[in-house]
Image (tube, rainbow, N blue to C red):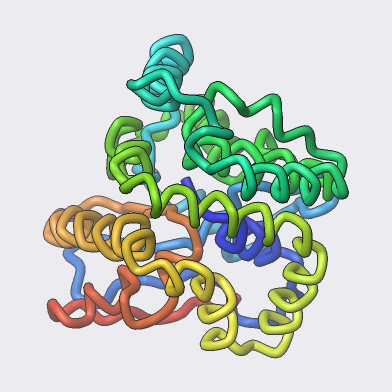
Length: 288
């Protein structure tokens, strides 16, 4: 689960010319092979095929390690978990949690991009934010069913590859559901603001990528979250720290692993890659 900037950045990564560096790294010092790939949560049919180095990373892996174990995710149980966590335990609706004045403005802004906010009334702000993000990206032509994780989970099943998860659905949703009400409200209002200007955000992200400027790309994907320290800590830092512990275990094994996480988790000083390096595991970027 990610904020709009994260999803936009992930969706844009494969649009770059193949000659530029890829969001793909290999750990040094691992007993086997451990590669880390910045994922594309939403894609378009026109974004395939993926660059050859990504295809090779998949082909050479025995095990795919994703944020969630998509292969074993029970859809009915997942929906029940989501609905239980997405609704306010006190029975309050979205407008009540946001406040009438802010909700009215958010509704007008959403209507300007053909999104009907009232359809999210039963839900807490964090979940409404995720739904708005998904719908907005779909408006812009991106499809979650064409996302890298979804595509490769299906392919791995056919190829007999094992798929593992770094966290459970409850872990992932709990990072958002546990945020205080005022933090959720700010997260929601910023999601609306970003949804309105999503097209220009894509342009900026693409420009940073085409110029090979990963520092700028990292700032672009995490800028909004840095303005919300509690959100940044829960969605990025805490999860990166938990994943880093697990990836170090993979590095001590002699298997061939491909770890696929949202691209924002691999960029910046709080990234998984930086945490691994601080623990003695440097990484090499794969360019082709």
